[in-house]
Image (cartoon, rainbow, N blue to C red; front, top):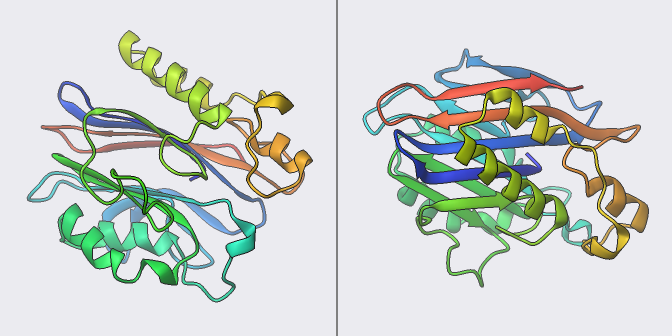
Length: 245
């Protein structure tokens, strides 16, 4: 994923609601969200090159359904060509039986092997954000407090224009008990940020402009799917995906 907004323990009976866009090169092979034959408890899209995922949920288990999602950190200068796939972190959490705290404790020991990432993992009572570039943030690796959060290719709640704008719209939709269509309309916004508000993330100005929209459009790279997820207290998790390209 490259943009995720989520409400944690804000809505009664739905401890987690998340809306997200996945941005990727168009030629990267992908399977749409479905139950995985090799892990029948996992419902997620799948990266057919490396086998991982960007977002998924599981069937109900002893502690309810599980959720995981990942975004890459935008830092081309630090990229390791031989690093393992970050999408496998989503798949590994959804496939295991560790609690979020146990999984994050194990991951912290090997996190430096990966290129920069933000990982979200959750069960009914616990949501944790972990980044291998977020050591200075006291929220890193510990259960998050109730609230509304936004995540793109910087750290949690970085004040990038599309994160700030989408968090505000998302909060409004939550308050309105809006329809699914309203969330997907929010995620389809192709408006680019004005130059004076663009972050400096190490890419050239034209790419900063392209990447500043909620829904990205370019000849080779862009938003390929939008997803809405709900974890329920007393019902199975829900994941609805809309394919864009």
